[in-house]
Image (cartoon, rainbow, N blue to C red):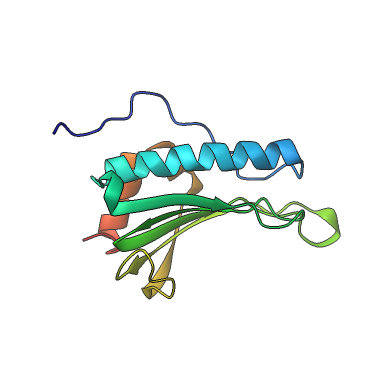
Length: 133
């Protein structure tokens, strides 16, 4: 079976959620596209991972998750914060024994938002940080 490849350009996820329902829907759609591309770049097959999202409440953009046997990666879309101020999103990863291991192992690793635009580079950083073997 030939390796899967990503043909299209990555969506440029906005780091600061605009606070609208349309912005939230756009964040979740684009974040799932990015996480699927990361799974492909990491060489994960369809049965080796899950990609999903949680929209959370009205004050949060929510989060999107790549859960794999060995590591978890998630994108937090940000929030409105105190007094309506917008707070930017975060990208975090950690080792995990399996995809249902929600406690994980080791420290969380914060990643640069811009790595989301280049899944192959993101995977290399995860390897350098020891998140992916």
